[in-house]
Length: 311
Image (cartoon, rainbow, N blue to C red; front, side):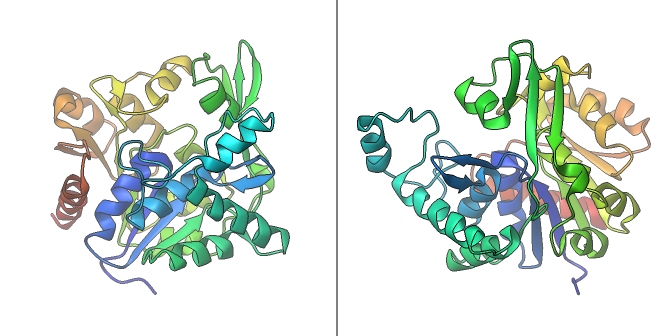
Protein backbone atom coordinates (compact mmCIF):
# COMPACT_ATOMS: atom_id res chain seq x y z
CA UNK A 1 0.00 0.00 0.00
CA UNK A 2 1.28 3.44 -0.89
CA UNK A 3 1.76 6.28 1.58
CA UNK A 4 0.14 9.69 1.68
CA UNK A 5 3.30 11.00 0.01
CA UNK A 6 3.40 8.45 -2.80
CA UNK A 7 4.08 9.76 -6.27
CA UNK A 8 3.58 8.08 -9.62
CA UNK A 9 5.23 9.58 -12.70
CA UNK A 10 4.32 8.76 -16.29
CA UNK A 11 7.57 9.11 -18.19
CA UNK A 12 9.39 8.73 -21.44
CA UNK A 13 12.82 9.90 -22.44
CA UNK A 14 14.96 12.63 -20.95
CA UNK A 15 12.17 14.93 -19.74
CA UNK A 16 10.53 12.06 -17.91
CA UNK A 17 13.82 10.98 -16.37
CA UNK A 18 14.54 14.48 -15.09
CA UNK A 19 11.19 14.90 -13.36
CA UNK A 20 11.42 11.39 -11.92
CA UNK A 21 14.83 12.28 -10.47
CA UNK A 22 13.34 15.40 -8.90
CA UNK A 23 10.71 13.36 -7.07
CA UNK A 24 13.24 10.66 -6.17
CA UNK A 25 15.29 13.31 -4.35
CA UNK A 26 12.28 14.05 -2.14
CA UNK A 27 11.26 10.58 -1.01
CA UNK A 28 11.31 6.85 -1.56
CA UNK A 29 7.66 6.18 -2.35
CA UNK A 30 8.00 6.74 -6.08
CA UNK A 31 6.76 4.66 -9.00
CA UNK A 32 7.78 5.56 -12.53
CA UNK A 33 5.66 4.07 -15.31
CA UNK A 34 7.72 4.18 -18.49
CA UNK A 35 6.87 4.07 -22.17
CA UNK A 36 8.03 0.93 -23.97
CA UNK A 37 6.60 1.59 -27.45
CA UNK A 38 10.06 2.91 -28.47
CA UNK A 39 11.59 -0.50 -27.68
CA UNK A 40 13.38 -2.18 -30.57
CA UNK A 41 15.58 -5.09 -31.58
CA UNK A 42 18.88 -3.62 -32.74
CA UNK A 43 22.02 -5.65 -33.47
CA UNK A 44 19.97 -8.61 -32.18
CA UNK A 45 19.52 -7.03 -28.75
CA UNK A 46 16.39 -5.97 -26.87
CA UNK A 47 16.71 -2.20 -26.45
CA UNK A 48 14.39 -0.24 -24.12
CA UNK A 49 15.55 3.37 -24.61
CA UNK A 50 13.10 5.13 -22.29
CA UNK A 51 13.43 2.57 -19.50
CA UNK A 52 17.21 2.84 -19.67
CA UNK A 53 17.22 6.65 -19.74
CA UNK A 54 15.09 6.75 -16.59
CA UNK A 55 17.09 3.95 -14.95
CA UNK A 56 20.49 5.51 -15.63
CA UNK A 57 19.25 8.92 -14.47
CA UNK A 58 17.84 7.56 -11.20
CA UNK A 59 21.07 5.58 -10.70
CA UNK A 60 23.11 8.78 -11.11
CA UNK A 61 25.11 7.45 -14.07
CA UNK A 62 23.39 9.07 -17.07
CA UNK A 63 25.47 11.07 -19.52
CA UNK A 64 24.80 14.67 -18.41
CA UNK A 65 25.49 16.08 -21.88
CA UNK A 66 22.97 13.97 -23.79
CA UNK A 67 20.64 12.90 -20.97
CA UNK A 68 20.78 9.31 -22.27
CA UNK A 69 23.44 6.62 -22.20
CA UNK A 70 26.06 6.16 -19.48
CA UNK A 71 28.44 8.93 -18.45
CA UNK A 72 31.99 8.30 -19.66
CA UNK A 73 31.00 5.33 -21.84
CA UNK A 74 33.24 4.19 -24.70
CA UNK A 75 32.43 2.87 -28.19
CA UNK A 76 34.99 0.11 -28.77
CA UNK A 77 32.37 -2.54 -29.64
CA UNK A 78 30.57 -0.24 -32.07
CA UNK A 79 33.86 0.77 -33.70
CA UNK A 80 34.72 -2.91 -34.23
CA UNK A 81 31.23 -3.65 -35.58
CA UNK A 82 31.77 -0.87 -38.10
CA UNK A 83 35.06 -2.45 -39.17
CA UNK A 84 33.16 -5.69 -39.68
CA UNK A 85 30.79 -4.00 -42.09
CA UNK A 86 27.84 -3.17 -39.82
CA UNK A 87 25.94 0.08 -40.33
CA UNK A 88 26.06 1.40 -36.74
CA UNK A 89 23.33 4.01 -37.08
CA UNK A 90 22.13 3.36 -33.53
CA UNK A 91 24.75 4.27 -30.93
CA UNK A 92 25.23 1.89 -27.99
CA UNK A 93 28.15 2.40 -25.64
CA UNK A 94 30.21 -0.46 -24.25
CA UNK A 95 28.86 -0.25 -20.68
CA UNK A 96 25.36 0.34 -22.03
CA UNK A 97 25.64 -2.88 -24.03
CA UNK A 98 25.84 -4.86 -20.79
CA UNK A 99 22.28 -3.78 -19.96
CA UNK A 100 20.98 -4.90 -23.35
CA UNK A 101 22.85 -8.21 -23.35
CA UNK A 102 21.45 -9.12 -19.93
CA UNK A 103 17.94 -7.92 -20.80
CA UNK A 104 17.95 -9.93 -24.04
CA UNK A 105 19.16 -13.06 -22.29
CA UNK A 106 16.62 -12.83 -19.47
CA UNK A 107 13.72 -12.12 -21.82
CA UNK A 108 14.77 -15.10 -23.95
CA UNK A 109 14.64 -17.26 -20.83
CA UNK A 110 11.04 -16.24 -20.27
CA UNK A 111 11.25 -13.46 -17.70
CA UNK A 112 8.73 -10.62 -18.21
CA UNK A 113 10.17 -7.20 -18.96
CA UNK A 114 8.88 -5.84 -15.64
CA UNK A 115 10.90 -8.43 -13.69
CA UNK A 116 14.03 -7.84 -15.77
CA UNK A 117 13.66 -4.07 -15.29
CA UNK A 118 13.29 -4.41 -11.51
CA UNK A 119 16.40 -6.61 -11.37
CA UNK A 120 18.56 -4.26 -13.45
CA UNK A 121 17.37 -1.12 -11.65
CA UNK A 122 17.88 -2.75 -8.26
CA UNK A 123 21.42 -3.78 -9.18
CA UNK A 124 22.17 -0.14 -9.98
CA UNK A 125 20.81 1.03 -6.63
CA UNK A 126 17.60 2.61 -7.94
CA UNK A 127 15.18 2.87 -5.03
CA UNK A 128 12.11 3.92 -7.00
CA UNK A 129 9.85 1.30 -8.54
CA UNK A 130 10.65 1.40 -12.25
CA UNK A 131 7.79 -0.22 -14.18
CA UNK A 132 7.32 -0.67 -17.94
CA UNK A 133 3.85 0.27 -19.14
CA UNK A 134 3.33 -3.34 -20.29
CA UNK A 135 5.16 -6.64 -20.54
CA UNK A 136 3.63 -7.16 -23.98
CA UNK A 137 5.22 -6.00 -27.26
CA UNK A 138 3.99 -2.58 -28.41
CA UNK A 139 5.67 -0.67 -31.22
CA UNK A 140 5.20 2.92 -32.35
CA UNK A 141 4.90 3.13 -36.14
CA UNK A 142 5.26 6.56 -37.73
CA UNK A 143 3.48 7.41 -40.99
CA UNK A 144 5.19 10.08 -43.09
CA UNK A 145 5.01 11.24 -46.73
CA UNK A 146 8.20 9.19 -47.25
CA UNK A 147 6.61 5.98 -45.94
CA UNK A 148 6.08 4.09 -42.67
CA UNK A 149 8.94 3.80 -40.24
CA UNK A 150 9.58 2.21 -36.89
CA UNK A 151 10.03 4.82 -34.19
CA UNK A 152 13.81 4.41 -34.00
CA UNK A 153 14.13 4.65 -37.80
CA UNK A 154 12.11 7.88 -37.75
CA UNK A 155 13.74 9.32 -34.63
CA UNK A 156 17.38 8.26 -34.88
CA UNK A 157 18.15 7.15 -38.42
CA UNK A 158 16.08 9.90 -40.08
CA UNK A 159 16.67 12.45 -37.28
CA UNK A 160 12.90 13.07 -36.85
CA UNK A 161 12.96 15.32 -39.93
CA UNK A 162 9.86 13.83 -41.59
CA UNK A 163 6.38 15.29 -41.33
CA UNK A 164 4.25 12.96 -39.20
CA UNK A 165 0.87 12.20 -40.73
CA UNK A 166 -0.24 9.48 -38.30
CA UNK A 167 0.96 7.37 -35.38
CA UNK A 168 0.06 3.75 -34.69
CA UNK A 169 0.91 1.74 -31.58
CA UNK A 170 1.10 -1.78 -32.98
CA UNK A 171 0.00 -4.39 -30.44
CA UNK A 172 -1.39 -1.96 -27.87
CA UNK A 173 -4.99 -3.17 -28.15
CA UNK A 174 -3.87 -6.66 -27.11
CA UNK A 175 -1.51 -5.44 -24.37
CA UNK A 176 -2.14 -5.54 -20.64
CA UNK A 177 -0.74 -3.11 -18.07
CA UNK A 178 2.39 -4.47 -16.40
CA UNK A 179 1.99 -5.62 -12.77
CA UNK A 180 1.70 -2.61 -10.50
CA UNK A 181 0.74 -0.05 -13.16
CA UNK A 182 -2.96 0.27 -12.34
CA UNK A 183 -2.32 0.14 -8.60
CA UNK A 184 0.28 2.90 -8.88
CA UNK A 185 -2.24 5.12 -10.64
CA UNK A 186 -5.13 4.34 -8.29
CA UNK A 187 -3.26 4.45 -4.98
CA UNK A 188 -0.81 7.34 -5.44
CA UNK A 189 -1.30 10.64 -3.68
CA UNK A 190 0.12 12.44 -6.73
CA UNK A 191 0.29 11.38 -10.37
CA UNK A 192 2.54 13.53 -12.53
CA UNK A 193 2.68 13.35 -16.31
CA UNK A 194 6.26 14.32 -17.11
CA UNK A 195 7.24 16.87 -19.76
CA UNK A 196 7.65 14.04 -22.26
CA UNK A 197 6.33 13.97 -25.82
CA UNK A 198 2.53 13.67 -25.42
CA UNK A 199 2.17 11.61 -28.59
CA UNK A 200 5.01 9.07 -28.59
CA UNK A 201 6.07 8.98 -24.92
CA UNK A 202 2.89 9.48 -22.87
CA UNK A 203 0.42 8.54 -25.61
CA UNK A 204 1.41 4.86 -25.69
CA UNK A 205 1.17 4.56 -21.89
CA UNK A 206 -2.35 6.00 -21.89
CA UNK A 207 -3.28 3.72 -24.81
CA UNK A 208 -2.61 0.49 -22.91
CA UNK A 209 -6.11 -0.85 -22.11
CA UNK A 210 -7.22 0.23 -18.64
CA UNK A 211 -4.53 2.84 -18.05
CA UNK A 212 -6.33 5.98 -19.15
CA UNK A 213 -9.47 4.90 -17.28
CA UNK A 214 -7.45 4.23 -14.12
CA UNK A 215 -5.89 7.69 -14.34
CA UNK A 216 -9.25 9.34 -15.07
CA UNK A 217 -10.86 7.73 -12.01
CA UNK A 218 -7.87 8.08 -9.67
CA UNK A 219 -8.33 10.00 -6.44
CA UNK A 220 -4.75 11.28 -6.76
CA UNK A 221 -3.91 14.90 -7.47
CA UNK A 222 -3.03 14.66 -11.16
CA UNK A 223 -0.75 17.19 -12.81
CA UNK A 224 0.94 17.38 -16.21
CA UNK A 225 4.08 19.38 -16.93
CA UNK A 226 4.16 20.92 -20.40
CA UNK A 227 7.06 19.88 -22.65
CA UNK A 228 6.37 22.95 -24.78
CA UNK A 229 7.76 26.29 -23.62
CA UNK A 230 7.22 29.46 -25.62
CA UNK A 231 5.92 27.47 -28.58
CA UNK A 232 8.97 25.19 -28.77
CA UNK A 233 10.02 21.87 -27.28
CA UNK A 234 13.20 21.82 -25.20
CA UNK A 235 14.17 18.51 -26.76
CA UNK A 236 12.88 16.23 -29.51
CA UNK A 237 9.97 16.52 -31.95
CA UNK A 238 7.06 17.29 -29.61
CA UNK A 239 6.39 20.76 -31.02
CA UNK A 240 6.64 19.57 -34.62
CA UNK A 241 4.30 16.66 -33.91
CA UNK A 242 1.73 18.99 -32.38
CA UNK A 243 1.81 21.03 -35.59
CA UNK A 244 1.88 18.02 -37.93
CA UNK A 245 -1.10 16.38 -36.20
CA UNK A 246 -3.23 19.53 -36.14
CA UNK A 247 -2.83 20.77 -32.58
CA UNK A 248 -1.88 24.18 -31.26
CA UNK A 249 1.87 24.30 -30.60
CA UNK A 250 1.71 25.58 -27.05
CA UNK A 251 1.21 24.54 -23.45
CA UNK A 252 -2.51 25.09 -24.11
CA UNK A 253 -2.38 22.58 -26.96
CA UNK A 254 -0.79 20.05 -24.60
CA UNK A 255 -3.32 20.81 -21.85
CA UNK A 256 -6.18 20.01 -24.24
CA UNK A 257 -4.69 16.55 -24.85
CA UNK A 258 -4.71 15.74 -21.13
CA UNK A 259 -7.70 17.75 -19.88
CA UNK A 260 -9.88 14.70 -19.24
CA UNK A 261 -7.33 12.95 -16.99
CA UNK A 262 -5.63 15.74 -14.99
CA UNK A 263 -6.53 18.29 -12.33
CA UNK A 264 -3.74 20.77 -13.00
CA UNK A 265 -1.37 21.86 -15.75
CA UNK A 266 2.12 23.09 -14.95
CA UNK A 267 3.44 25.62 -17.46
CA UNK A 268 6.56 27.72 -17.72
CA UNK A 269 6.70 31.37 -16.72
CA UNK A 270 7.16 32.26 -20.39
CA UNK A 271 3.65 30.93 -21.02
CA UNK A 272 1.91 32.67 -18.12
CA UNK A 273 -0.35 34.42 -20.62
CA UNK A 274 -1.92 31.06 -21.47
CA UNK A 275 -3.06 30.44 -17.90
CA UNK A 276 -6.60 31.85 -18.31
CA UNK A 277 -7.27 29.73 -21.42
CA UNK A 278 -5.98 26.62 -19.65
CA UNK A 279 -8.11 27.44 -16.60
CA UNK A 280 -11.11 27.61 -18.95
CA UNK A 281 -10.56 23.89 -19.57
CA UNK A 282 -11.44 23.35 -15.91
CA UNK A 283 -7.85 22.91 -14.81
CA UNK A 284 -5.80 24.51 -12.08
CA UNK A 285 -2.67 26.15 -13.48
CA UNK A 286 0.78 26.06 -11.92
CA UNK A 287 3.13 28.69 -13.35
CA UNK A 288 6.82 28.28 -12.57
CA UNK A 289 10.23 27.74 -14.12
CA UNK A 290 9.86 24.29 -15.71
CA UNK A 291 13.37 24.06 -17.19
CA UNK A 292 15.24 21.30 -15.36
CA UNK A 293 18.94 21.82 -15.87
CA UNK A 294 20.64 20.17 -12.92
CA UNK A 295 19.52 18.02 -10.00
CA UNK A 296 18.66 21.04 -7.89
CA UNK A 297 16.33 22.32 -10.64
CA UNK A 298 14.62 18.95 -10.86
CA UNK A 299 14.13 18.76 -7.10
CA UNK A 300 12.82 22.33 -7.00
CA UNK A 301 10.17 21.61 -9.63
CA UNK A 302 9.08 18.42 -7.87
CA UNK A 303 8.92 20.26 -4.55
CA UNK A 304 6.82 23.06 -6.08
CA UNK A 305 4.38 20.54 -7.55
CA UNK A 306 3.96 18.83 -4.18
CA UNK A 307 3.42 22.22 -2.56
CA UNK A 308 0.67 23.03 -5.07
CA UNK A 309 -1.01 19.75 -4.28
CA UNK A 310 -1.03 20.65 -0.59
CA UNK A 311 -2.72 24.00 -1.19
